[in-house]
Image 1 (cartoon, rainbow, N blue to C red):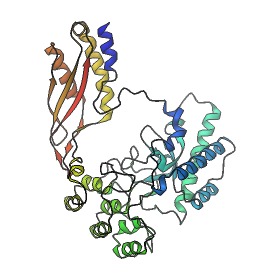
Image 2 (cartoon, rainbow, N blue to C red):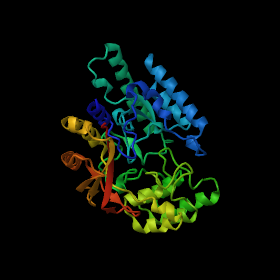
Image 3 (cartoon, one colour):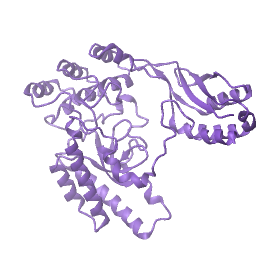
Image 4 (cartoon, rainbow, N blue to C red):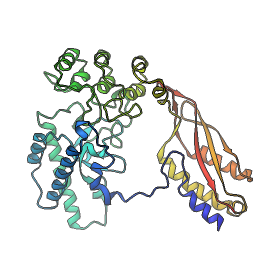
Length: 399
């Protein structure tokens, strides 16, 4: 009995710092609520409860209309623009909202969070063989609407994010800006023509310090306001390596942490973008603006690539089965599996502490971890890859 308990426990693997044992709802069953999930309302204009509620109600009405004869995408796009809603139509996946299936691409590292898009479909739905004819027809109608809606929205001269999202289906198919160099992960390098920058972010991307100065002196622009993608003007200036714009914004008290809804540790905070680009001079410039203990927290230990996690769990189950009888005779314990990782993300060594009375089991756990798990290297406070250690907790259930 103890061996079976152990094997069942290993299904969730108890990875430190994760919620690996928390069950997840089927994505299709909760997809329509994702657009507002995980958003912490604060004083940021785009994330106030009123704005989020208005967007949720508009999205619900749109999805209901798509279940019927179908609304006019051009009319719906114009209504959204008038309401100041510039979110693209997108399909939801397990990790992000993707407009690419509907003819649009956005350069945002990590992809779009659900509340950054109008989620009207689920990625891969039309590949399901068991759908009825009516369901397939609905999915086709949704895809057609999404493409025409995005086309109309992107073509509207009032659309303010043409440097970030454009027509097309080929950029960052899996995760926003996957595979792009850090300096290309936010926005397109060939900036859209714009005679006068419309926002601080526009001016920041162009390094237009004259326009930045005029806007800041007017008092009508919040230097730490984030746009629809969670980036402030300072974050955009850093993403485009516009050092003069960075300097102008820092003098205007732009925060290295980003908006009032963010912290230094957020991936889209200005200082984190500078770290991903290893722009040491700007990191040093911002360092004096944050508390030393906060700056020290930027250092990262190695991180496991998530796609190997399930493989590791299943392999642990098989390993537990092979040693079922021996483990059942031992005292229950928690073993810390610590893996040394070099600055390229390669596992160098492994140790089990405090160790079980079964040396062969300990060796096999370490061999498994070394062979299966892959890592992002540790990074110091300046974003430079350095050696580090990764720890997984494995609990043995015995007598």
